[in-house]
View 1: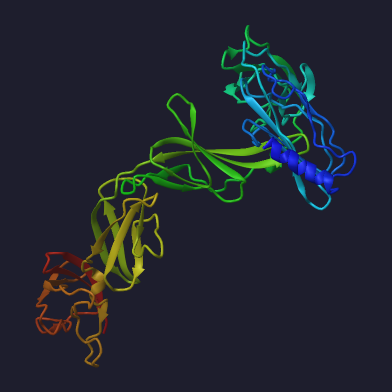
View 2: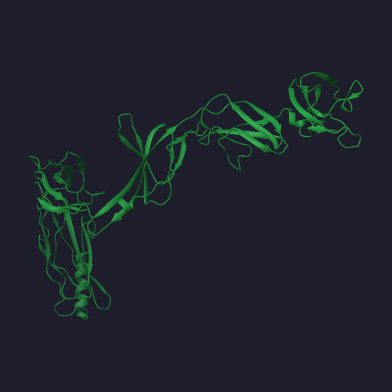
Length: 474
């Protein structure tokens, strides 16, 4: 490889592609082939001169780029890895020169080997914020110095009140941490960073450094999302095995938390919609993300609610009667509770179990709990009522309403009566009608009775007793 590159370079010089002062870089430090090089060593090479482009690659394999690949229009003459080099490893460096016409010239490569670790790393220090800094922005990023021989860092962040913001998090081999939320305002923050490698953490324990945050520059008051009309309880439908809950739109984000018996909170889902399959207490967090130059804030609104189950409704009976304005249906359940009723689920449900003013026709009643669960249904069979009997008659032989008689309503196929007994207004029995007869002509024993209000008692084939009254007009 090196011989071929030298031949190519010689060809370029002979045919004038490289101008005077343009040469392939040569490794200065560490020396080519050198071993036991410290992992924090800086790498330098000679200046190749002026080219249209220059590519340097550093890796752990020949031609590799896992440590660095850098292309510039002006050559650079050195590089120091931000987090050090891997231990006990051959490091390979290669260069490519790019001429004005775009021709790429591969230069000879170099290599050196790093030393193995002989001890753990030493402690590091905060670069930003500085130790004992004051009025630090709430959204400040933590940056620390590279500790030679370190392959990772353990980060712990505490407040002066004893709250743990970060609990010994393994950051890996990086030198910064951008907190997902803000630091609390006007609070002392303590940061401990412990470098480590395969031989262990920095010995003796690393000291914590301190800084104090400033006041918040974000006013969350008008930025908090509104959650109008969110229910205080939602139902877990037994037939589904879960409760579907949706938050009102308009916030940047949503989190759902379950509250345990000891008061602790567990995040169970994020997003505007959630399915909850465990009863208990919860709260919804809706938040807006608000930012300024030095601070990023989460302005949130919390609302508590519970997930409950209710027993499915059981219809004991329905009571149907005919009134002046139409049918009246009332539903009776076996249990008390919050339930909804409907004669047409597509059109919606109501909280009252009574329906009135209905056309004379057949119906099916639907009942569910207030959360839309456990829907049951039952066909309604109405009973005869006083409204099914004539309210008056006029026995004057004019051919209209001359007889008082019962005609079965068309919406009831079995609405027949066995007997009809008529009484005067004082309760005196006058006459018993045969339901199959023409009807009553207003005479008793061949003599007309006076115009007045009369009462009737009818017994249906289903042994229903119907009482009512009517007027005789002359």
